[in-house]
Image (cartoon, rainbow, N blue to C red; front, side, top):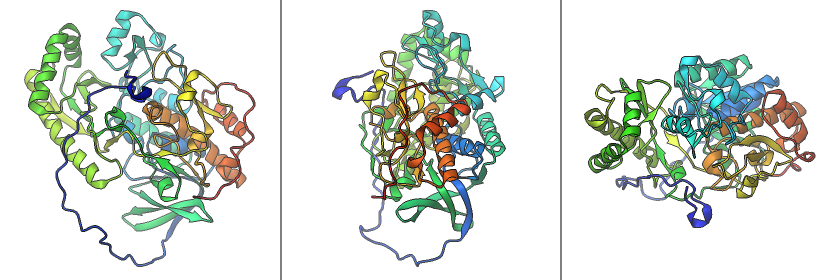
Amino acid sequence: MDNQDGGRIFFRSEVFSPRAPARRRAPTGLTVAEPARDIPVHAACDVLVVGGGPAGWAAAVAAGRLGARTILLERHNHLGGLSTGGLVVWIDRMTGWDGSLLIRGLAEELLDRLPGDAVAGPPREAWGSRDAATAAWWALRTAAFHGIVTHSPTVCPEWLKAASLEMAVSAGVEPIFHAWGAEPVMREGAVAGAIFESKQGRRAVLAKVVVDGTGDGDLYARAGAAFADDIDARDIHHCMNTSWVFGGVDMPRYLAWRAARPGEFAEFMRRGKEAVGFFDKAFASWRDDVALFMGPRLAGYSAVEVDDLSEVEVLSHRLMFRHLDRYRAEAPGFAGAFPMLSAPQLGVRHARRLRGAEPVTRAWWDGRVSPAEIGVSPSLGPAFAPVSVPYGAILPERLDGLLAPGRHLACDATSHSFLREIPQCWLTGQAAGVAAALAAGRGVAPRAVPVAEIQAALRAQGAHLRQAEAAPATMGTTRPAT
């Protein structure tokens, strides 16, 4: 943890800033004319969710379970986003530092649906343990931090895809795969659907309420909502990379070597960096014969510029095979390693953050409970209380017809470091789906839904909420787009 720069940078971890090659770009200002055309309406619904990542998936399931006709657009062939297609199979911290389960509701149900051999992590009775030996053992397996055991399981991405799909379909959600949400449909300054690109060309879905689950704020940015995109390039939360997994390994042997011979491991990492340039350690996964690589983390690239995204993919895939050579040659347990899978989805940590009606800031880290609480997030460290997430964090300041859960919600740059994680995306996504369904059923804008009704529906779906002073009636009156 690093408190320099006024406490903004909390995690100091290696980031790599390669120099991108010069690209042959078209002359500045060169354009082509696109003729005006009518876009066929593919469907109309109550709630449209654009993006089937953790937040979008949870929003769709929550809305569907409340009886809203819900359509979910997803550009890939699966649900789960970075938790599945991005191979972010380490689900970071579902519990508070006292071991209490904070991320509940749909997230808890989803993980409970996985078979036992698809999940690895501490047993429930160990959550919150400060026993030194227990914490040291789980720290090597990404489930203990600051000497405290947490519920941070690693999961099989294919089982997570299957469980996510079954929960969505069972809730009545209508998934449309291979469909890239491209532009919002606007009516009288409010979002009223979205245009998507597919093998059928450009088509539109009309909706009473839209949930932007793109993770990068693509829809709300194009609809005119205000946002921030500042992040410190030295912070790991600015970085991008493609994750990968190696099969045929002996992770218990590797982890035992790391624990017993830290000097040898440090020398191995030093030689790797010297030979490869950007070199990362292997993480445990849901199986002892599969190793997970979450990096190296590449800095200096934009998550919303296609040339940058392409360069990160090229570099990450090259690094995968250079890692394979080094690990096979020198790391205990990796002699028989083989390239099992590189992530189909690029690992993006940050692109945009909404300017919302009530953003989460450092002020919220003191344990206060928002009257408009929609969930409770584990905090960055034991020195901080669990963080109350208010409804206004997913509600645009001045744009109606749209909700924005997930890693592009409204918060400051430091709070983003944990609110972008997969459990928090499940949390805010479920709240967005509940609010969207209630707004669609009432025929009102999301900000006009009584907060107490959102909270009651969330509790009915198993979410963890705390009691505070009386919830505000609504989050304000309908506002025009800026």
